[in-house]
Amino acid sequence: QELLALLARENIPVWVSKTVWQMSKVYEGFGVDLGDYRLYADEGSVPGVLIVPPQKARYVKVSNPGFAAVSGWAMTRRFNRDATQIPLSDHADFGELLRYVDRVKPLRVWTTHGYARELASVLRHRGYDACPLTARQFAI
Image 1 (cartoon, rainbow, N blue to C red):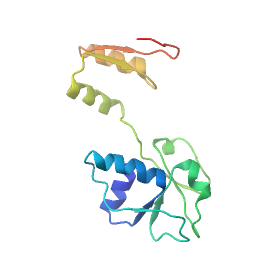
Image 2: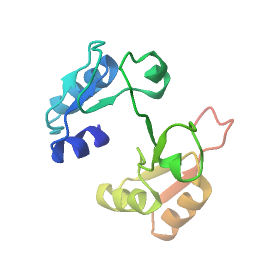
Image 3: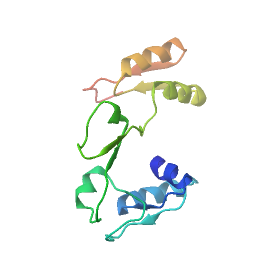
């Protein structure tokens, strides 16, 4: 949805797969403006950009497609030798997580994934009741 909004802001024609369409409608239902886009229906050509989930890309029936892999991992991982790599993360970074917690001011924070221990430690130093969840932790 972030990519969709960025392309729409640049007035680039955008088509989306059914799954991207459905998720985008949820965002719009909550007031997020994603700009103009069309539902892709197996046309032979798309005069613009077609956004599909990675697992659906091989089934796209577009003549002469160019591919781009869009992911926060694009800086460190090669997805496809024929695809352009575009680094765009779909989640908050460490600083954004800290700002979010400061805005929400929760009573307790559980951290998980990535730098869970480090994030919990920084949050505790900021006065929050924070602890990391372990990989095999099934109860809080």
